[in-house]
Image 1 (tube, rainbow, N blue to C red):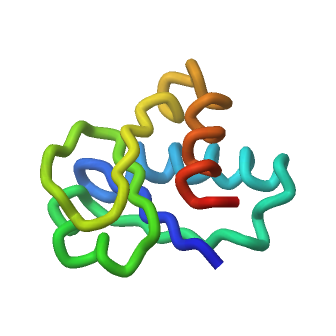
Image 2 (cartoon, rainbow, N blue to C red):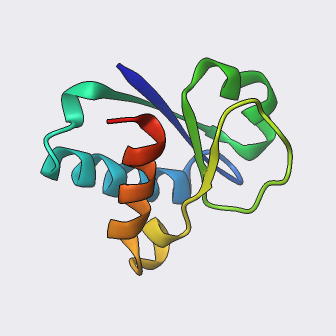
Length: 94
């Protein structure tokens, strides 16, 4: 089971939208049983990211958390979601 952490400024609004769109995309690909999810604020990434295989943020971050970080604004804009999900699936090795 791969673990994905979705983060935004406050850990509530845009991360929830991104998470729901990601879950839908993973379900459509038949991968929902291979992934679990978490959610937090960008400020909390330092203490949470190490427990996940991949981090998706809706805001730009430059810190190194020891795991791959993907900029997920596409989930908010609705533009380029499929290529983004392709990249996420590839990075997770699914």
